[in-house]
Amino acid sequence: MAQIMTLDDIDIRILQELQQNSRLTNKELAARIHLSTTPTFERHRRLEREGYIKMYTAIVDADRIDRSFAVYCNISFKQINREVADEFREIVASWDEVTECYNVSGDCDFLMKVNVRGMKEYQEFILYKVGELDYVGRVQSVFVMETLKQNYGIRL
Image 1 (tube, rainbow, N blue to C red):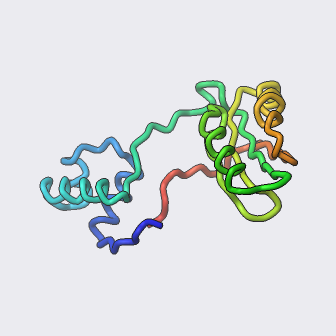
Image 2 (cartoon, rainbow, N blue to C red):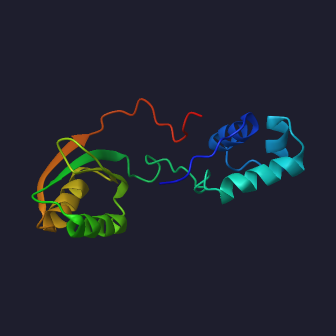
């Protein structure tokens, strides 16, 4: 487990600003947090080095690339053990349709978010990918009808 370090108010403000716009230049970031550029740069790099900032990415509009058919897919295994779970992790990592996947507790073992073009493509994904796995016992699909909130940042 990652070690939790204490962040001061300036560190938190840097993380908040970068969650809103990770393309800020060091000069722009420094102006927003009211600190000079050199200490801002040093703190920013430390936050990266210490793992507070995992990566930088662009958020692509799923509608614009025809991948707006979103489904949450609950996967239950017939039987689970370390070998099966490790194999599933590796396979899921190779599936482009899966945008998120979590090992969860409750009625299912894994929860996946799948983004595809439509029902036909989702059906093929279930039949020809998920359905090919012998250890999958049950698949339950929840179709997204409308996105009310989608926030990629974490409240600090």
